[in-house]
Image (tube, rainbow, N blue to C red; front, side, top):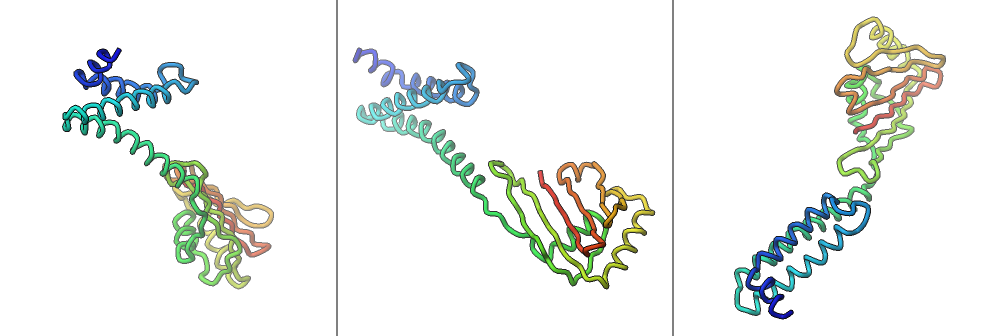
Length: 210
């Protein structure tokens, strides 16, 4: 038994590396017994085998081979550790607010509506999508404008309703206007809902960044 271990862990030092590489592929792809922990346990087992082989190589004076095996063993686990930290960071992203100087440009870009500069923010929240690996988030924004600004706002909406726009169109409803965006390439990535409530002098924006 000792001679077999010596042969495959020391003399043929590439064998543990080969099996460790295969175990990585099995772990990532789940090709064998996909709904079990077979891939994970095989990765751990052959990782331990490779660790023993590298230590054995170092004791036998084969420093280069030993450190080479250790480097191969270390890199995948460092990568998995990095991914785990990244995932944990995504899960714990703090919510925030949309900067005040970005509110007017954002509404202008999305709807071509120029809102008054003197408004009160009633709701302003950016929520990051829990568990997302990229920068998915949603914006919930409600602002209140002055009664004296309503005439200018409505005039812009009515004028815009007469024109063709690749961004969307305004629709009248009981208490104001809804902006219905077109489903173009930009809006598919950032679908949004925007309305102007002329009875309560409020504007509401809900946007999702996918």
